[in-house]
Image (cartoon, one colour):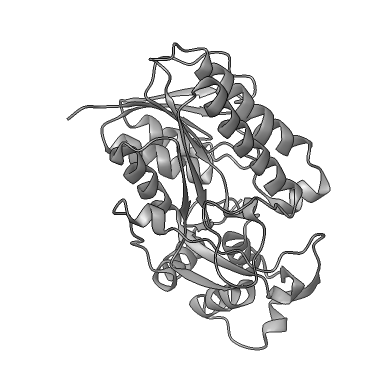
Length: 315
């Protein structure tokens, strides 16, 4: 079996860890890169270093100045919390735009026959929200907040660098990822944490916004499906198999935690968000034609997540 050499940026973040571990499980050599922001989990480094083929570089992707010869650069590094981007977008521009630009520059510096393929993590939010139906990969980008605008900008850089310089790429646009290990600014772990602390869970727009939920393991498997297919220079949506309102998701977590009673006992409905979105939905038929499918069931996994966090406090 031919082994591969891959970089995984943001390897100590939620999605980066799942991807790096999945690559290591294939016997691939993995160079992990992470600048270790507040959302990084330093405990994950020890777990990754238990694999003999893992190496680590503590570095901001915007400052990375060298790429060793490799087959793929999987870029999961990003500032990703929408609420933070609304307060201040500077870190989002640096990571999601300047960071992508720097990776493209490093890849381009390789000879034309030695360029690694960039596997870039974008987001379903670059399409903007949609009340009915689902976005395909051919739809125009209409981001609705600073976070998704910076992600869309990174996407445009990649497409331009491919056309102008021949930089090879594949781009993935997943829906809302969930799973154990996510930083508690996201809905699922935040809800679990607030329940532990006896605090009310803030829900914007009455919890009515709808999302499609995708387990991080399924996302990591999608990346491997794309790599193993040999396809290049394509964009792939990755959709979960469960769509619902944020309020319903919180209710499911409450039920799994054995919390009964009036919902207002647990939820603060007074929270609002600038540029309020309604619903995100994408069509991933293109990816499924490569043989990928969801393996994780949302209701089953939520029960596991709640059980895990009942005995493991989320910092």
